[in-house]
Length: 208
Image (tube, rainbow, N blue to C red; front, side, top):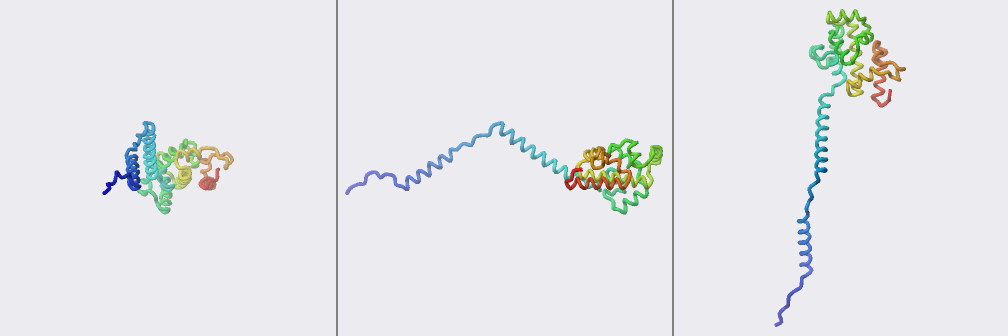
């Protein structure tokens, strides 16, 4: 009986060995550690993303509507019996009663109006303003004109995004108004409507 000699590797053995070699090569792959520059860049990106997330959350929290801004610039909810957004009826009645003098002070300060500028827009001589300061109260007509200024300012803040930008726009000569300052046109209802119309066009992408 003849004995078989050493048997050579079969095709199946070769395939198995190839798979083993591939697995060994795969297991031996070394993932290089990112460089310090890359790590710093990734960290900076993560920080920026975190800051952007925080800013968006803050902006959503702090952004107020035009109506809320009007109440705020007139002295806050306490002027309207604690109502952050009074109804039209409540607002009308409050104006008829006369707004407190501090509402004028608040508007003047927030919109960066000098005493003479405020007096012109409100049609209130400086002597009358001095008397109102003593009595701490405006009459209905003066209150209505002050509310008109606050209303237009609220629309401007809504359009431009910040009080700073809105105030700058109101105090800057406007080409659509033949070089007039928008704030100076708020002394009449017709002028206020002109400003509101211009702000509406800007809001819809028409430069004015």
